[in-house]
Amino acid sequence: MKRISTIGLATLGAGLFLLSACGEPTPDEVRQRTSTIITRVIHETGQSIRGASEMKEVKDLVDSLQTMIPGLAGDDTIKADGLDLDMDEMDEKEAAAALNKLLATYVFIEDNVVSAGGDSITFQLQGATLCKEVAPQSCSGSFGGPVTCQTDPADLAECVKMVDQLQIRIKATLVGSDGVDLALQVGGGTLVTLRLRSDRVTVELDLDGIKAAAQHVAKVTGENIYLPQTMKGAVSSSLIINGPGDLSLQSAITRAIHVEAGDASEPVTIKAEARDPLTELRYRSSVPSLSINVDWGAVELLLPAKEVWDLARGTASLSLKGLTAKLTADKQGLTIKGVGLGPGPRAIALDGTPLVQVELQTFDMDLLPWQSLPKCVFKPGVDLKVKLNLAQLEPYVDDPIEAWALDETYSLQLGGGNPEVAPIPEQTAGFPEGGLTVLKGALQLKSHVQPASVDVPAGSCLRWSEEVAPGGHPLLGHFQSVACPQ
Image (cartoon, rainbow, N blue to C red; front, side, top):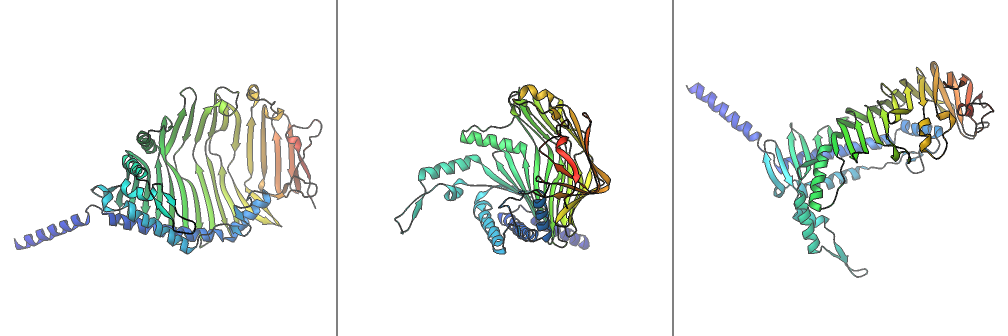
């Protein structure tokens, strides 16, 4: 019996210990977890931004694109010596400290706790506390003397009333040993959820919750807030720390999007397939490398045709079956893999009749140095087909549609076993508008309705001309296969 009693006491003690360890979360615990993760993420982000801005490969990429497409970078966005980004260590520390102070002062405090249970605790922002900082103030003072600022009591009372009626709450849920989910709620709707983990921060937007929150705000403020009749789906953005000096920024459609707005007779509809991730930007300092990955699913846009063409009637639509590409910039150069538009037709249509259809076979591309210019190497090649049927738009546009766009099918084929091309800069002798050098393989531009083609073999160049020779194709006649500049 003595042995059984000892075991029983030990079991009871262990159970009491576990119960005490699994008690309701406290404001201090939520604040500590939040602060630790935010501080680390801000630090890692600053390190990665500085590293990416100093990458020679990124500078070379920008210079190459600027050469191929003059004016692309603009005057202020990207500087000649790399990306114009500046985030020093002190800025990171100050940003983290300011955010943590804000949370500790106005959010995660005992006075804001409205409920707690299990692994969650809910805080409600109090107007009396918050409005002391955000309510408008009037300031006065003599020139060169002290300035006195004060809040009008009526303005302060109105602010307090508004904040309290909005019921701005943050529901904090502890996850695992160091994670926390923070759901921002207004009324009964969740606007956004912030998921904090030791290796990532994710921001989730729920369209259903946004609509419910907006309806509550409209009721409290007495203002009319326009909302689509249908708002469904969810999107997210994540900042992921894959390891030291390895950072990813991802976006995702975590639940298929369906938005409908406008009149019942003339609705605007947007649909997008779920994809996770949808895009990813990743920087790795150990290589170093910068990569961008795109993987869109099907997207559909329907809207009244008159929104596109003033005189048109019916419904205009854009259907995209997908978009894929993975770009990597490193010491080897620039590589783009899996460039494609997804399965099935991609089209712009009017009342279901296609106006423009595009087909593209998936390909890879390398951008490599060549003389003083970049050259593009395509694997296995490029096979693009565009079908135009704009004739049915003629009754709805002021200017006549060019003959080459009424009923035509064009193709661009670049083949010959990993073909290579390089740009010719503008203002080159004989090429005032620039051009293209075919270094390997062959390029063909072709019309499939009015028999016409432009063939550019290896060693020749493609040039644009303002004038079309008599009897020439109205579009392809502008392109010429000519000898390359010396």
